[in-house]
Length: 470
Picture 1 (cartoon, rainbow, N blue to C red):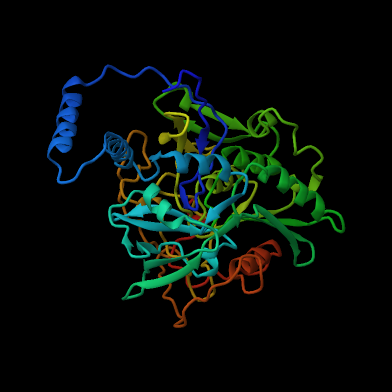
Picture 2: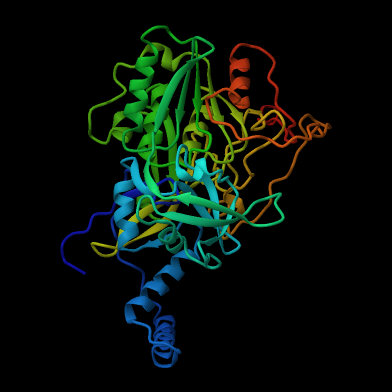
């Protein structure tokens, strides 16, 4: 390794994305001296290494074996720790600028296969109908069984405008589905906004990037040009996360200064942090982009829309606004990624992504493998949920919710909609796809109803409204 100083890139609030989207955050992590080496175990490793080199049916290079060993060590820890080779590391460092090549899918692992956490809005994956919960069992003719996320992403990446076929197992489908896509440059539009119901501000954040906080501020100012909004809807559905600094900045836009947004806790001292709604924690030494926000932003009634695809940085924002009673959360229980990853460069071309801490909402809640529970549960559509309920707890080797525990595989209980009452779905028709923020968006209409003090149709919900639990 070169003696030139290597910089640690920072905190991560999301997982791997086909194409490749890996989001980095704001804290540097110093590489510390390790504990005494386990000599007996290292001797065993050396013996296995020698046995493979001398006896395997085909020749394997030292580099391949070492890379596989590193990948195995990390992938066996949890779904989000991974080895980043030169291609993955390079793409990770450029993807948070909002443009990258690929398909546009947030992925994890389940039962040895690649599992879709969320398709990214307005990408080839979303346009082709990929859904949260889809198991990708093959890319073209190559099975993904037992494949690392990094290797799966490599298969899905490729030159722009080239085709790729994904073989998918989908809940409710007896046979695999073949989805044909064309690779493209993915330009993620982080923030978009409009006025709904004439004077309710609607802002959708698709992903937390470097400019998400400043883009949000500009959208909020633009929304005030013709009318002063009387209420606010922040849409975080299917937002897989991204930069921690972006999550803090978005939260700070709606909270008083110096309010706690999120805290992290891990074994290492520098993994224990508190992040507040102030420029030091979201602007990172740059000018405060929240200066000059309209007064209504911090005072009007507010709804945050979430679903099973809202993960990580999205959950930080929802949890902060919920704990400070700034917003009412409407939708479905979120994904439940409450862990923080850091990027540790190993060489100038490679790095490891390592889980170092859990994060906690201002009230001290860990959402790891649990998620944010809405105040009002509303199904994706009026006839039921469209997006498969795949969450962090469903991923292989997911960390537990408790400090110091891991590999939780507990199922989420199904609770009645009212105490003692089970609501049976009445609809027989299948939910149809829709676009967030456009006509036919059932949850958005219920958020508008709530802000207008009109009845909220929760759909055929089989879940206890958490407003009655909290």
